[in-house]
Amino acid sequence: TYILLHNRFFLPQFLAEPAFLSLNSSYDETTSTLEVVFNSGKTYLYSEVPNNVYLELMDSDSKGSYMRDCVIDCYPYQQVKKRRR
Image 1 (cartoon, rainbow, N blue to C red):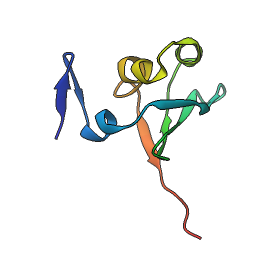
Image 2: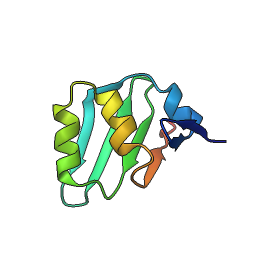
Image 3: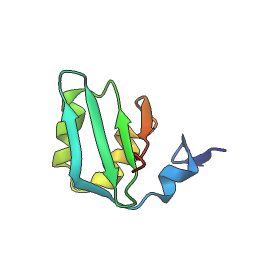
Image 4: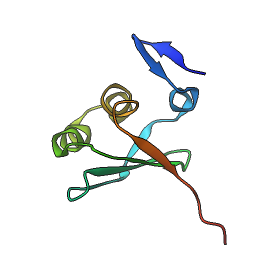
C-alpha cells in the first residue's frame, strides 16, 4: 500500500520514520551508494546516488525533508538486515 503525499507515492514505513541522523550516514563514491541510519535504528542502502545529492543532503538544513524530497523513492534501495548473534 502506498500513500500519496505532495503528488508522490510513499511506502508507509518511510512516512513513519523519525528524523534522519546525519551522523549515521555514509557515502561510497566508487559505488555511488548512500547508507542511511534512521533514529529507529533501521539502515537503508540507496544505490546510484550521485555525489552532488549526498553533498546537498549533508548541507541541507532539514535532512529528513531532503531525504523525503530527493532520495527516498528516487533511487533503488534495500533495507540492511541486522545480523543475529
